[in-house]
Image 1 (cartoon, rainbow, N blue to C red):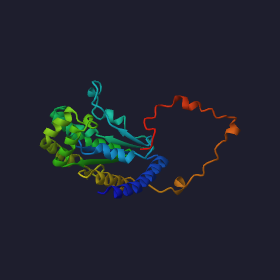
Image 2 (image 1 turned 30 degrees about the vertical axis):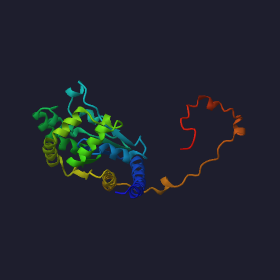
Image 3 (image 1 turned 90 degrees about the vertical axis):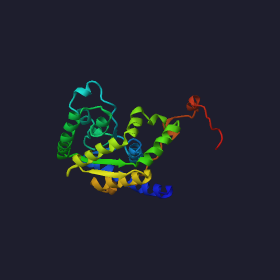
Length: 264
């Protein structure tokens, strides 16, 4: 996808996201959007694109670290419940409770019994969420083996991106086929009428971002409240004379060093 077209489309979709944001706040709606996928599939890029011009108090990102010793003793879904949306919020889960569906069994972080229990409980847990009024969307971002390898090689040789590669990422790359088996099982057994899976083709990052935004807009009802987007007439700025202020230049005392004194 050409960059010029991408930017034009994104600008139009961002205005629609702003309408959605206004509707969610005004009506006290609650939405949770799950993003799952292989490492380097582009989950983070999709989330950043969605939120880059939005209000961070409305669009909250939940990217949980590995569970603590205490959390390992809790009901599996418990730590995720704490991050569910309140009225007027949309929570974007950068990975979610579905770690137990794919990553944990492949990497040996859970037992077979724990995995099977999760697979039974997940649809019922999500039924409770939707029946409570939460709009729940679940996205799996698909990336091909060749495209993932290309992105891994880029990360491996670009110092700015080296932090993105962990030991688990490298091991998941090695276990591509095993991940595929568990992913297919997850998609098959945890999709439901109230919380279906939606798969995004992530091989083209720009298309994936635009298509995901359009899907969100199609599946969360929103309105155009014209009054909320009407131009605002700014009040006149207070003059220095009105405030009794005399310019001193005091603020320049603490200026940091200018490394770019000339236009580049």
